[in-house]
Image (cartoon, rainbow, N blue to C red; front, side):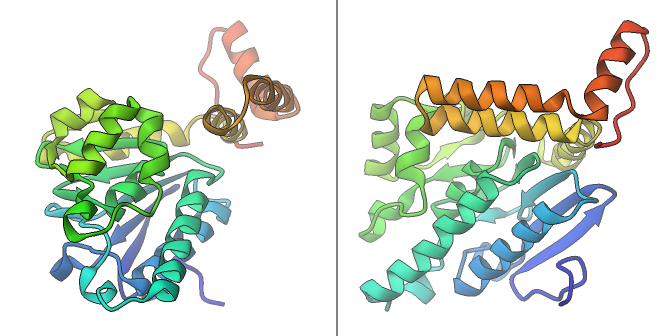
Length: 265
């Protein structure tokens, strides 16, 4: 079976820069809107990057004009209930794969980031936006509503009434407003977006991989677990890190007043 690294995809591009994998939407003629083929390809590449032992960080991105405009209405307009359910089930499953990927993920966002594209970006651990980024959940304006996770994830980032306002009105907002809402980590000039994102990715790639994975599992549990269950996941993961060489290296390096060198072991 051909590796995701070498495969010729129709709707995405995959490139590898050292220990960082970049999955890029590649339907510029449709502002990177997601059709059924893109959804399948995206999920495959994300899953395989997650399993790739040489990859430490995954970046999701589009181009300067669009991260992704969301679902491709031209391909969806004639869906019946069965078609719609099958399409959105694949979207949601792909989003869960991205959310639970055992390594850090970053959404590098420029231009249009709306609907299902915005939902995909929200599945990433971190989000960096260019100053030209524009966000919205505009589905209500075409007679539907967000079905790829926004009704569940948006209230995890902001108040319920703010989330309802964005979904009920479908209003568009800029990158600075997204930052004020807490929906992105940082806003940078478009010309600096790739450099800033790659710098962060390389910084994360140097961290102890297993400890990052355990920290991510514990943080994700805060969204869907009771406090007691979340603390169990945290203490389990914390204890597990003591079985790694990286934990010993990090603590010894601190005590010896030197920089740690992590190997992922």
